[in-house]
Length: 392
Image 1 (tube, one colour):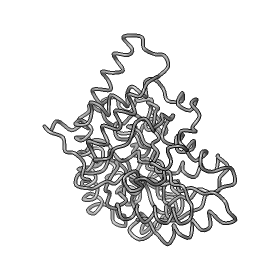
Image 2: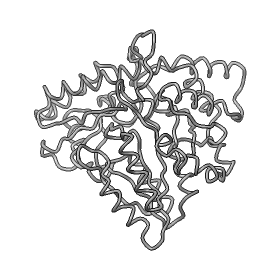
Image 3: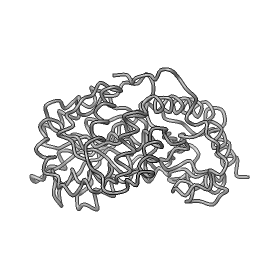
Image 4: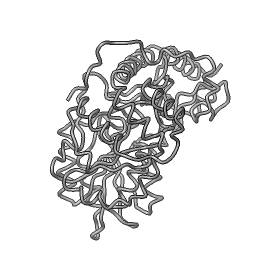
């Protein structure tokens, strides 16, 4: 289903006074010296969604700084997903989790044990590897295929390996995919579901980037594909509304997994902060039009980046993005080896994610964050062009 279009339109959320932006205390702005332009980690340069600001201000004024409680967040998420994608779920079956990655880890604990295997589809979000290994599970890779889409043959081989000797196994899937910006189609996901069912592989899907699907692109949730079958979705308003510092997520079971999720220890919900729950609920309940304007601005930035790269960065190719504010750039033709991000940093003073962070298929690539003002995108490309020319 194609996402809802906000009406009436408003100003771009990236129309933000950038004065003093470098003084922000967040990871994005503090990792490197002030002369480095940070276009890496998944934080956007955007003002706070107005309903979130109003909700948290009201809570502070009333002294509501205790423990979180209630299902407002879950119910707001259900309404948002139904409005945006026509996706519905029963809020009574869902559970609050500390955040999406912690939620995925807790769900994996329900369906696998130490020594079991977790299949991932690299290049993919780096913490998929770290969280899997820290949980004592083996990582089994099913690399993406041509055009950076899911490869059924690779998945089938990985599932067979993962379940060898009677081991339990799970697939940890990123949908939409990070770092490539690919939106898996309904047919692709149905193929994954059939393969997983045939091999007895449980499926856990990180859908945190779903609210960032670009205009005109259809998004299908795993819950819509699985129907009455198996699997879990873990998601939040974090990426879509720039709330990474406001911890809180939601785990949602498909029909056949309701009993499994019900076994999640109640104490897990305590990891979501009061402010995280309230911020996410307010964003989802009352910030939809603001967020859709943000999505439109992000899509514009992706088009701008593609044009600028074609004009100014010989040897660099941008993979067409269908979602997210993250761009995947192939720099292998530059001949800079496995880590071109290091060269761009040294010669151009621009901070990008190195592709190696995303596993197999990431060498020679960088990930760029275009969740910012268009002028910053232009400056970023200019700095990259300087690096290609040999440095300042």
